[in-house]
Image (cartoon, rainbow, N blue to C red; front, side, top):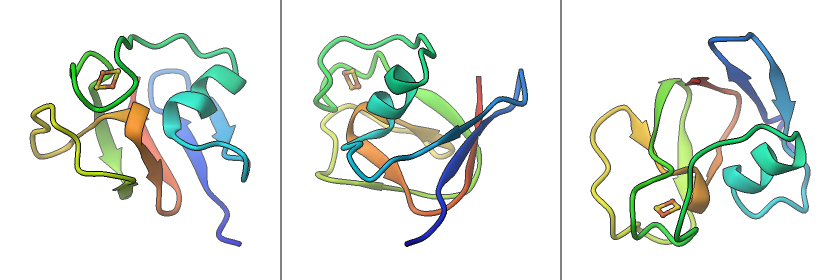
Length: 86
Ligand code: FES
């Protein structure tokens, strides 16, 4: 299985994804990293974050607008290692 870790650029903290995590928001919660969210379904856009490097995959195309370089952690998972501006 691909090693998927998330680096938070502000603190340098590294978070590991476990196979039971369905999305990036669950990875943050697992590591007690507090992030903004509301709908958890790719609808409201409140979980929006900036992706510094790497790539994510959405389980379903989110309804909220996602600009280039942004991600919605409530409905995506990293493809491999990613870095997030947080
Ligand atoms: S929490 Fe609403 S889009 Fe992610």
